[in-house]
Length: 272
Image (tube, rainbow, N blue to C red; front, side):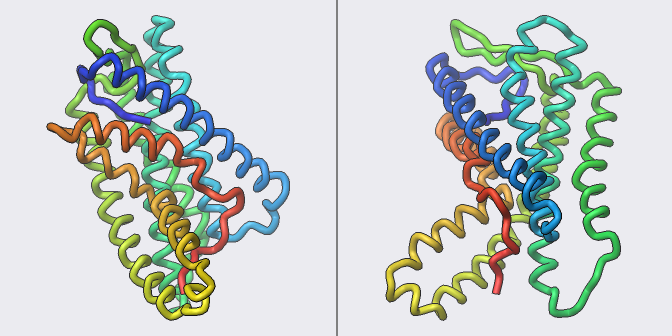
């Protein structure tokens, strides 16, 4: 999916292409996220570990984000200001929650790295759930009370598309871009640390390389880790100047299909 700034103008062909990619990708993501949530809550909830519980919360946030995004244009076209504000607030909340759960995933991986020091956190899951769900809710409530949500228009030359989102571009950049920049710095740092450990482990595991099975598995691990930590959202930083349109396509393709990258059941982090 692609998040836009108020007043953004792109070509009609690009808007149409991005819309189709978004709808197909988000629909597929919702399906696979729904399958994973179904398997968890009905089949394996009693056996869930911390890693699985955290990942399921991320799945819920991403599922809600896809759901609100797919229904956004339809609600915007109804011409109901109150409904549009509510949907914009709900979508923004689910997006901030998704960002926060990316950071929680990174924190949990760091915690897993240092588990040999026998550090324990009381009510661990409760505390990360408060961070993942309550803090974004506070931001959303403040912006809703300030009247920052509403309907905006994406221009594409001869046509335009309405959507429910943040109407103030300054608020959009300060709240969304700045917040994700902080999350990205943290998750990307964790990504580099983990990749360093995994690269070392892959070099030691010469048996897999001799059998020729190490390459695909390693690529899958890298892609899975990128999705787990939301690294692909970083392409939003390139949506300026000559890289704007290419970054829109890369960002939309990677993040619309993001829910497709996860396995139905999450294992413990693959760190040795």
